[in-house]
Length: 251
Image (cartoon, rainbow, N blue to C red):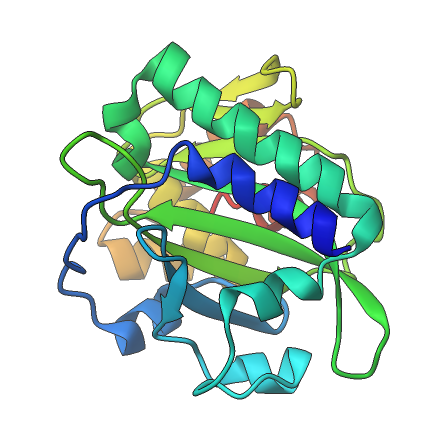
C-alpha cells in the first residue's frame, strides 16, 4: 500500500508547482451551501507546493474519523481502496495530459475534474465516493498550485465504478464526459449557462414553476430548457438526469 501511494504521489510530482501561490478570497460557508449533494460530503484544499492540506470541513470526522486539526493528505490517501489506486494514478496522469497536451494548461482553472473511487469509512467498511477537484491557483510556470477537493458518498446511487473521468466546464465551454484513461472521450456535452443554473435547481428538487420564480423566467421557458437538457444528456427522465449530474459532477 505504501509503495502504491508513493507511485500516486509521483504522478503529481512532475506537475506540481514549485513556487508558493496565494489562496484566492473564498467564502467557505458560501461554498458549502453551493455544493449540491445527495449524500454526505467533505472538502479540503490541497497545496501541491508542499502537499499540505487546509480548510478541511468538519464532516471529514463523521465520514472517516479524522480530526480536522491533525489530518494530512497522506491520511486521506491512506483510506483509498487499494484496488482503485491504479485507476486513480492513471486518471490523474490522463487529466494532466488532457490539459497540457490537448486543450491547454491555462484552462485548468476553468474546469472541474470528476471521477469515482472507493474509500474506507470510520466504521471500517468501504463506500463509493465521487471526487471533484477544482484547481484554484497555478504557479508562474502553469504548474499545479492549490486545488479544492470535494468527496461525496454516492453508494446509495451506485456501487459500480465506470473507471472514467469527466472534465466539467465552469464557464460554459465544452465539457468532456466519460473520458477513459487513454484520453478518449465518449461524450461531449456543452450546456449553456442558463441550462447549468436550471440543472442545479433540478438537483435541488425544485419544479419548473419554482425554478422559473427563482430565475425570473416563465414556467414554459424552464420546461423548454429541461427538455433540451434531457436531450443533451441523453437521459429519459429527471431521475436519470439527477443521477448522471451527481455521478459526473455536472452540478
